Amino acid sequence: FSAYAVFIMLWSILVYAPVCHWVWGPGGWIHAMGAKDFAGGTVVHETTAVSALVLCVLLGPRVHHGEGVEPHNVPFVILGAALLWFGWSGFNGGSALAADWNAALAIINSYEAAAASLLTWTVLERIHLKRYSAVGTVTGAIVGLVIITPAAGYVTPVGAVLMGVIGCVFVYPSFQVSHAKVDDSLDAFPCHGVSGFVGTVLTGLFDVEGGLFYGGGWQLLGVQVLAGLATAAYAAIVTVIIFYALRLCMCVRVPENMELEGLDTGLHGYPAYGKHTPDTDGGVPKSSLTTPPPNSSGSGN
Image (cartoon, rainbow, N blue to C red; front, top):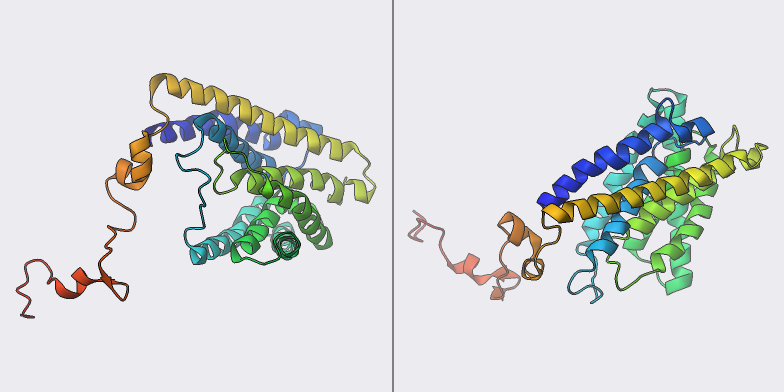
């Protein structure tokens, strides 16, 4: 946990801050080229996802990686996705930096792209797996939100819908790619990295003031591609440097026995859900039915 905390501090200074300046700050070279990123498709999503992928490779997989990991709590997955979707109202809408028509447009576009991507994902999942799933459906919504993030205030609502559909078609296959040495259990890279890059590129097509589909030519599209690739490359290189620098002076991976025990217990001193009691009666631990509470005679007095 200490290595994680130090890494986040260094990453925020050495990766996020420079890219933030490049894309949004005065004098930033990506901004000077004319690249557009309304709310952080490159700055937020690409940088974090690429760094996460690099760390997955450098750290290596968990001990039992690939042995049938299932979603921990599907209702909580749906609840978390709903909270994310609601929070994106502030994330994208707030990036207008004013309570005006541009903020309203960004929110409308975000919701439409998410809904379009959600529906597209269900169709693709039906074709691919012959079924629908709740986890897949909400994943599709989050993918749409990431895709529209760099373009939220720059495209029309119709453009947002098309970005959600087209982007999801390109992003969905990346979720099907896996490697034994890459333990990305939450699909952070395809969901945020691939989606962020796809959204950045599609901005060069659908932007109403310079997009290819609006008579702007290839200039903006080329700049968007360059911005996405440069951001990813920089995040990857600096993440490698930070990782090896930390490894020189502190432990960056927990011991195997602690990993098997669980990091909540090994690092923080208590299990997340209490101790497992196998002796149950109808799902209720028998001890809770028969054992009086501490300092109690059991008489009800």
